[in-house]
Length: 256
Image 1 (cartoon, one colour):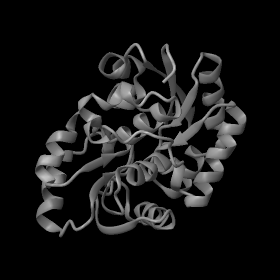
Image 2 (cartoon, rainbow, N blue to C red):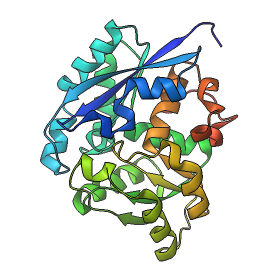
Image 3 (tube, rainbow, N blue to C red):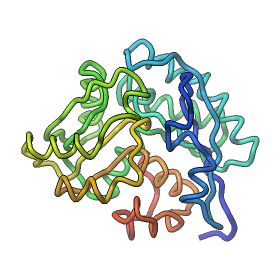
Image 4 (tube, one colour):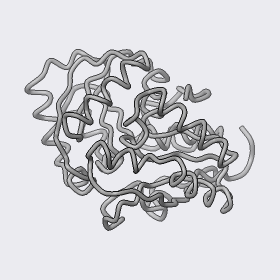
């Protein structure tokens, strides 16, 4: 591992809501809880219309808007970038998400991953082949996400859809209660429970969610930060912190 602190840039899709609702939108919160002498965080904001409609999410995932935020992070000293949006990185499908990632790499000149690709990489890194998906999205958007996971080589064992209309609705989800309902109502035969949507605040709930579900939990916020740290060769800066305990000993290059 190289010496010195590295900076991970996080691109948040700012669709007009109060940023204090979202754990991934606040650099000061990330640095206070997870920053260290080896790894710190900057956040920049891309633009897009609010809501979880398919058309709105294509606009959220527009490469040019996302790239402007990525370039600003590079100019501030970020050495890798995470596009911290799940829906805006899968809405066109798995290959579309890969192409988006490649375009962002080209425009920022930095290593890049996205919410969707971080989740997929995290599954393979941790040895999960099948997933139980707790999806905050409406049914049509959830269906695209599930297809994206299958196209990446994962099996979808079960799904619970929560039908959030927008990011604020996702931020207000009672994730503990929804996980209890998922555990009661479904045969969770998959290796892990996956929770997409960076607006669903999850980082400091993971131990409790795992206890309720009786399963490992992989959330997009957890995956974004860990896969970003791996892009910087700094996974050890997070692996000892509670949201990332399952990653201990699972270092190496991100798959995506």
